[in-house]
Image (tube, rainbow, N blue to C red; front, side, top):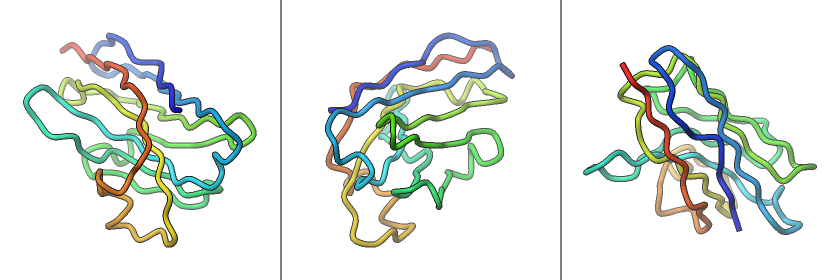
Length: 126
């Protein structure tokens, strides 16, 4: 089970830190990702991090502004969001997936993740 938190209302240029806590004892065996869904749009990839945190990937739209990290001792993955823009407004979901190989194309695929949190709303005002 995944529980996301940390969303809220922030002005453009501001920052938020999302957290996603996982239950269970196998957290380190999952690749974790963050996805977002704006009204009327499909859910899309934001960022992902491999098992021990050694490799990360970002959508071009957030590269240089967002940073994903994980703490396997706390069963938690984070998304630090800086320099927020109104177009970042969306519901943000954390997800966990079991992967044999960390192919970048697979890690960006919504359908490859089997476990999802409930989502947390991020609203950026201009």
